[in-house]
Amino acid sequence: MLTSICPKLPMRDKLATKSFYIIELGFSEAGREDFESYLILKKDHVELHFFSFQELDPLENYGQVYIRTDRIDELYQDFLTRDVKIHPNGSLAVKPWGQKEFSILDPDSNLITFGEAQ
Image (tube, rainbow, N blue to C red; front, side, top):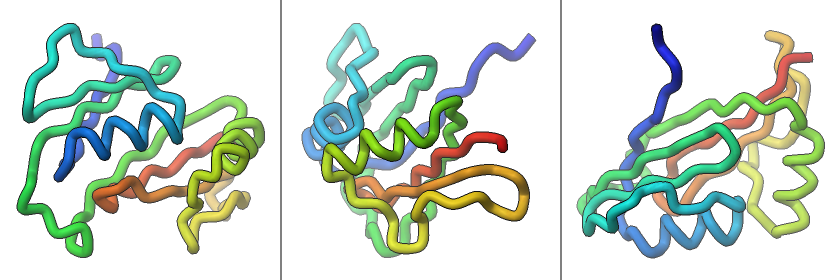
């Protein structure tokens, strides 16, 4: 019965969030309407929702999303080519649980991890 999941993450500045995901990560806008305090972005089969939280302290943000991919090496190289800053503790590596992963932080310190089964 379940068909998809759309995580909702906090954002302080809609323009900064939109620019980061569209310009740096290659997402596009998905919403039909432009709401002041809400943003919907997509890339391939992944959709992320963002809600306005201007009082958010990025140092205290624990927002996280795990996105599965079937071409992690290509995605990682694409992000490096785009000068996307990889999380200092999140370089591309095979983890003990059998996933090849890497992580980034968005402008609000939401941790975005990309993984592929090995």
